Length: 189
Image (cartoon, rainbow, N blue to C red; front, side, top):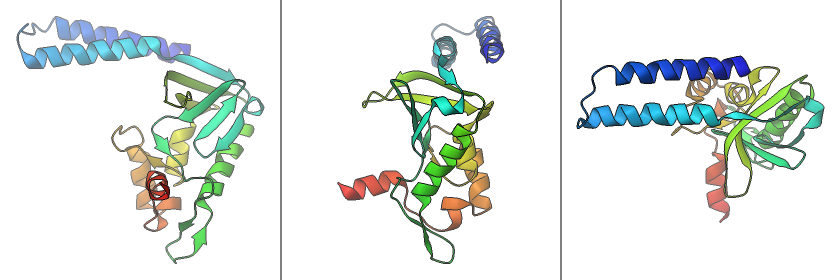
């Protein structure tokens, strides 16, 4: 992972220096926008460091998009799994426990992993670390979305390709018109 971080920093540094040397006009709004975006990306790349790492047995799965290790509560970034008690429907209209299945799949992925690494640069209002987590080098959020066990946050765009694939193949939550977890929470209030 250190190599990935180094490569990302080098690429961003190269892109920033190329943009600066492209004779961007100081008063041009597009020049300012490009500079601010590159500066923000460079800053973000410098702040993302492994929050925690260990074997899968070191982690405790809370639900389909949350886990914990030691004093760290982690919420997977840019996905939303069904609530643990949430039920979804199949194409045939049969109910299935999608929330329990998402939690169990997260448990299977994490507990069997030789290595789990979580990267975070922020916390939410509940004090949870918002993170991407890799299990044996593969993004667990991407896997859950690809398998139809979580929705991507569409405004972020990180897992839209995986969601499109799951939806095209009617996997999991995409078998029928199921209610997204944020809508379930809104209905309960």
